[in-house]
Image (cartoon, rainbow, N blue to C red; front, side, top):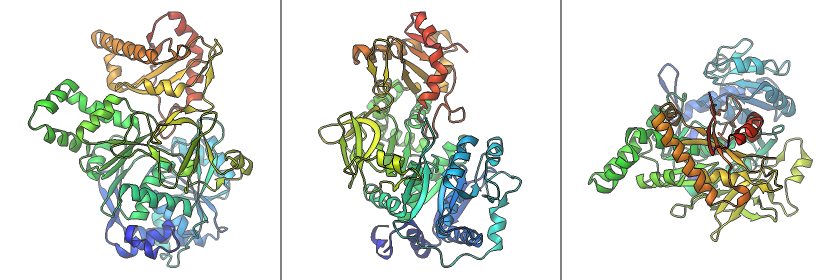
Length: 566
């Protein structure tokens, strides 16, 4: 809140919200496109009115103090309003991904002792919800947000809000009070309930705000899952702390126009989307033609600005990327346009506050230096150890696991392997538990090899090969690249490109890490079919279960580039 932090003596996001509700009541806080094409704006005053009404209703239920209330749904204005209402009523929010399966939902409901379930936007798909509804504990009420599908036995937000008066004396939490339990979206085992206090989530927002220089005039687009720490911290916590405007994305189909509407000043994305932007521009203006225009045209700067404007990124002053390295070709392309992508690293346990690249000091494949207040060291086994002001209170109902996750001197064991360069930039080299052994008895860490397999037409990579003589790589191509496979001429060209990539990677690898072959898979890996986490990371165990049975057959072919048959 910059200069306005003085009246936020107790330091929680609830206090921050009350500040903006009072000082800029008529400023627009949330902008949401509707499925019918309308766009609805909510001012700070209107958000406060709705949040206070729902808080009053929640208090009327006489739930025990700090009851767990789950939010299941896609990002929406009312997702955030519901979160604020939960806090104003003195309760704890427990978000779940809209793609959560019934088994995981049941575990979370029971483990967190969920007392009420709020259902949000589900894109009209009720099949998944029908399964989840079966595992909602008996006698647990359900509330449907305005964009939720019409569901039986679910009371609607608008009707409930109309029945009550806005709560005036809202609950003002203490900084160390539990604010939320975020269940991890891990690819293996049961999700862990990560507990964050109001102190840790505000610590993120104030320090992130100092780095980004946020003011109320900033704009962001919310489209990554709010149930995940990255979006919860970057969008919700930052906007509540610094008073800026949040735009929402309606659907994948409307993403370009939603981005154009928002024209975000600060934008965060995963490598997959940065790659799609690049591919989309190259489909209209081939790279060779771009290079010619950028180097020889007197209107080069205007053209670069035009491309960023077409993407909706012409007002973006800070752009973040994370979760996996981008190919250098794509990183350099954005830099040529005047947009330096800053790689970041964080996790649920430290509320996504760990390492950020600094402008002018970006190093390809590295996640930048430790943020202010963060200490980082590398253990003898290569594991990254972190101490941060945003560290979780612990894992909910798992005290032993909490102790196991920490060193004796208070550093968190991230489970990631990494290394630091001469100025403290962090490189992620894989997961401690992802290393596998080949039939030759050699250990292979897949992530460093995957990071080398960067190609503009490849959207996702998985290196595997336990019990085989050499590792191999599974490649998922983008939609346009798949079309190239249909024509013999373009198929041969793509085959040559992938062969060249394989040879380059093998030339940089130790003998036991050299890839025997790469396989272009026929399936799309998505969050819906379980191959990707909600934040677009590969689920290695799911992928290996699907493809490893085919590995010996591929190996027997004796080919280096294999295209899986439809």
